[in-house]
Image (cartoon, rainbow, N blue to C red; front, side, top):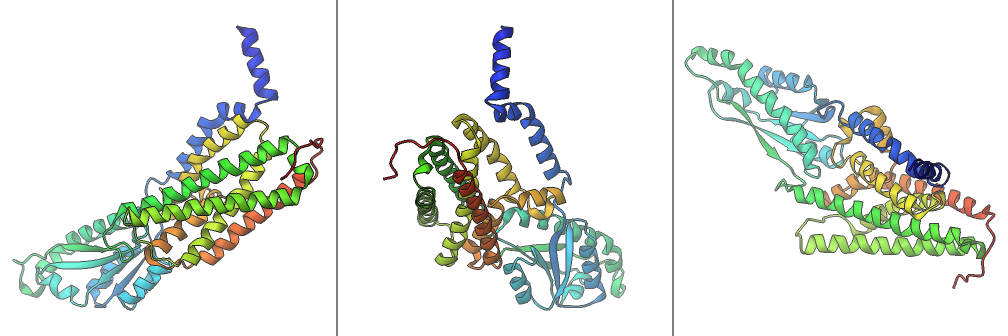
Length: 375
């Protein structure tokens, strides 16, 4: 029994080192990752603005309460709700509180007071994180000013009506979680498909000496082939989600192709490097499985980027899916993704650097060539 155990240990150390690392440190790595991701307990620094249509002492008190909330990053005031919507569309804020011009009058006369709270409907999770503290602010505000309102205008017998919120999501008026969720799942699946297909192809042909026949032609052919298949997969996903799932897609098709092509190109380059790094298919598959959960968590898909710790935010920025999920979702629901060109440039840069490195590794490969043909 001890001999068998010693044999397994020798195999892990000399032939399956990646497997040994995963066995020893996977639980610790996941614990540290998820622990740092959720360390704050609540999402903070949500960018919020206020549109004060009344500009009264009472409304300014409400602005102060909003600005001092721990969960919010107060971005100042805007002139009207149209400006607030533009800021939401550009991604500069996640929510905007609209205070009506009759706020004080209704509050002191015990009439129903409703504040509009505009939110980024393309991210229903972040909208929920923003609306919950705003609800608490309104409840605390009502309690704090209850006595002041009751004694205003010499009418102590009148108590003010509670201040309530009317939640509005311009990009997703039905507050559908499905529209937020399904596009992200589709892109995550496209990433897994690209990693499996391209990395396996590189892995097998690299060890068979296939690239010794002609590196550039073989590599470019593979890049185009797998990129075309993955783009077709994404296009079919959009077709089925919009046709049979009735999900909105308001974005320009050209922009969709741009950001998806950039994303898949970056994933393809990284997958190629993984294909030549791992010695066995088993190790390669295990690495892909191990990567899937961190990619899902760190993308900002479940836990918003504004709620991440600084170090986790930087780790998130190292993976391609971070740049595509938000842009694609916003493009689908609003038709506009302000940062799409910058993010596409970053993704193409990641892919280009990865393929240059991949070409270098293949060029300096000293494996003997075999008699296989490219065509």
